[in-house]
Image (cartoon, rainbow, N blue to C red; front, side, top):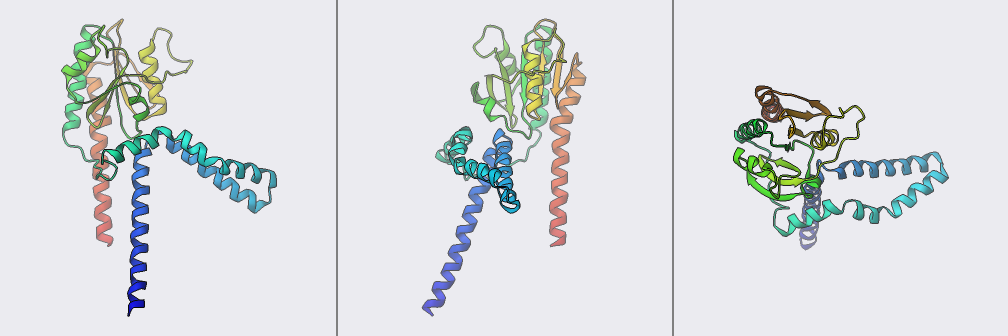
Length: 275
């Protein structure tokens, strides 16, 4: 009887052990999701795959090179993934690592669109330069860390005050994350495309540059002309009217999210029906 109890306890302990490990892996994936670490992790998987294939095909030299990469890989991962590891440790210290994540949004997205459009209208009329980038699926944590973190509720008044000339936060980009003004005075990567018009300045190059490495949507107000532009998917839309800006933002932030929620709901319903 005691032996049976011991065996049962071993099985239960193994189940708990596996469940905890998988949960930790799941949370770690959420931490690096949408960051450059995802592409780097894919590169690590490619190295492992090449190592297995080289062993199977008898490619000695290639196998030796891949083995050296694996041997030094642990140290390389610590160096390369340093920002993500630091962020995970910070979340663990704040007790947020094991907190439940939620991707559900209400009408706050529509309020975000309204705030951006209203602020853009005000600044365009007065030729106040502005750069506002909205995070979507691809995380922008690396760029948020380059600025001053605010984590404030979004409003047109806040956006306008940030970009008033000669104020501490006006030089740089505002990044909106989860319908919050996450940070201001952020540095965005400049596009190196040779097809950009010479008349466009740093703001437009930064807006186009961030659209080349993320799926974010970025609004730009020209300081020289007061014209409104928007970048998405490596494309620059210039000289937009307010209704055009609102239409694109609504499509990118509100309609697409509702479609994803509807698709997720249908998937869950089908899963329950099949079950």
